[in-house]
Image (cartoon, rainbow, N blue to C red; front, side, top):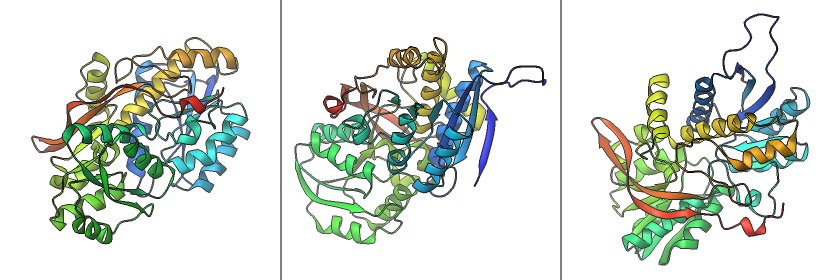
Length: 376
């Protein structure tokens, strides 16, 4: 099992200095097909900590290998042996569902930089669980709203068969007002989409909505472009973000996707983040990197007011969310999920680099659909 133990900032340089005061356990995906997502979350998180200059935060980072049982084993060790007080990092909703309920039940605070399953936003919410990214349905709800604005009347929809995939199609259907030309749940980790593309070709769809994050999206988009089907594609930012555009290539050009973040959001924090991330890591940031960055800055803002050992005060500090987000204004809803604007972006080429530019607003100040079910 791969393990990386690192300090969040400059650690003690002599044995006489005190150890870090707060231990953070980061469980994320650093190997396999989904590694790019976890690496970006990790790198964004660590960049924020480095820029803060703090020496009171220690981060223990381990690779979950995208396996729920491995994630649970790591979480148990981090909580029981390493005595972490805050956890973060999980990319995939099935892993979040395996880890988060047990972690918060033991009094640990969990700050999600990505996965936002509906169960944890609604009846399964918890006072110690905060999602800094979105509730899973949000970007898909934005895509449905954008499809309406574009005039699509008959969309073919597909997503992987796991919690986030189900939330994706549920979210799209919640806002989309047209008909469905077809609906498919694919296998998680699938790489061959010939059968699905054949069904799209045979349908009378005027558009395709897909949620296929990481390597799944790379495989589908390449095969779809090669197929010549040509029906316009819309999706969430996960399937068209900076982490995969280079691998997809020109097959992604012109695709419209929805995201709560984009590198061209015009505020000082975002401009500085994009520039510093590129300087630090030699690549443009993805939405995952922005989420890791925001998660770390939320944590720092709370630690400025209270320690996790003072749970009520620390929780109140997290709820206040007094930090400068890459998204601009940031606030939590009553279930500790963001209320935020979802943008429409188009995949374009800037020089030789594929990236996204904002072309409009899909939904403004959007809250998730499950908050009313949350009783904290």
